[in-house]
Image (cartoon, rainbow, N blue to C red; front, top):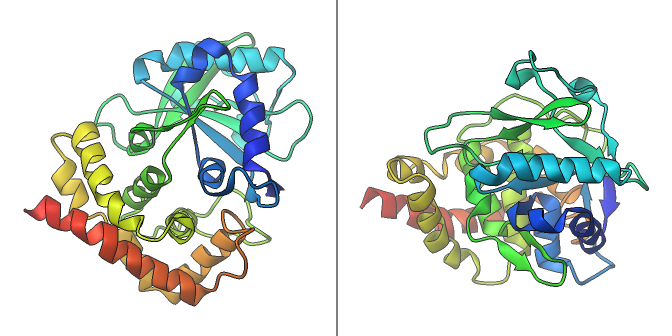
Length: 301
């Protein structure tokens, strides 16, 4: 992963996306969080290899995905051909075997843009694929169960003409996506190490909390609850009451917490100074007390 400037990369992405599609694009991930915390400071950067763009609402995703991807390809953006993403599919290729849309910008291979979309309904479980057609064949937009939360009340970046997911909504999506620590590894190394995806994603929650302003965590619960009630109207209490299980599992394992720390200091916290494991442990306890426990109590009421 390379150190990149959130402001510069977001500006490049925004300028490349067709104007009529920008309203349907929400940037997520470390880049979106980094822009919110220090986007106006060129001296600070984040380490990332991908710029995730969620296409929402779902009804507009296919058109926006096809238009955006084809416009970028025609402008010289290049397909990322690593792993299973090396070639387009045909009409006969099953949706879940199609390549995702991953594109390098014309001028470097430091990062790639990936297109995703939100689930069709609250009842979608796991990873789903939505087929799109480009000039050379078929691709697909992946969605995950809790990705809709990142599209809840996104921030308008007026100066760039694009929107970013709120950092606290990305934190909630990551919390809920990992109720336990799974052994599944990341597809690529982070600073020379292969770590569990659960630890990377749960670590990002701690990085966001560490960078947040004093008292900000106490405001998370209210927006979390509204988002869950909107996106999961029949399930939100069942989901919310278990919101802290993954983070508690992380705190219970010294090895997993150490992996999360490694991901943080080589990712979103790369320019945040020497953040220690002990400091992240304290941040995790604050997230539990100020944001997660109030949400769990609300769901139990």
